[in-house]
Length: 231
Image 1: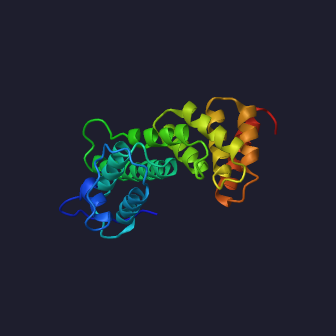
Image 2 (image 1 turned 45 degrees about the horizontal axis):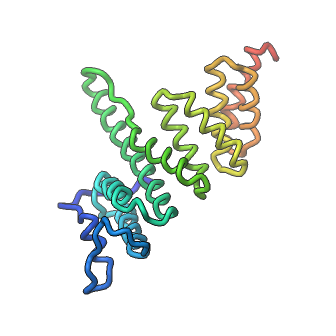
Image 3 (image 1 turned 90 degrees about the horizontal axis):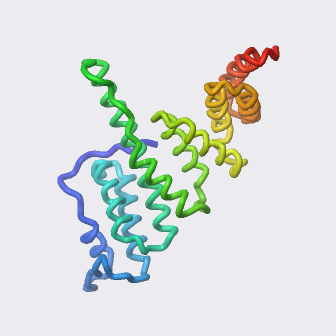
């Protein structure tokens, strides 16, 4: 769900935030110190996440910056903690990019001057791809694959998007995104005029329970069968 956020005057730097988490009287530890204690870092992550959820939070871009700082400054932390930060960074970047694009498009439609705005998912794609590469056993990998496939497809890299969709349906048979993933694969193969592959994907999508995709899939299957002269 989209979290409503408003601007505050300033963002507490990560170093100060970390110092506040530590027990009173304890000296702050240098960023370069290769300590193994993850409890203060977990607390810092929770603090950033709380800002993300709070209705009176700082603006979303500020939270994105905090996650980026966290990942850059604490590259030696517990892998699970880093994976969580990468996922949140990817999710927030995705929401921010979509919101910015919609705002720009609304303005463009009112005054259509120059080229139309374009979606920019660079940070989102980078975060998700790093997460998949470094944490292949991440519990929410199916969600990451789904989001990554959609962002790549929406920015014109449809072949790459289809690759991640295929990985999703192959490795996560119980994913709630499976039905839509098969439908999107059907769309990709239909555009490639590979009608047998499109038919297989659409037929798999029909096995899901969402009426929205069932109706759309049946309609597209009709066109597939027509092109296959199988009607």
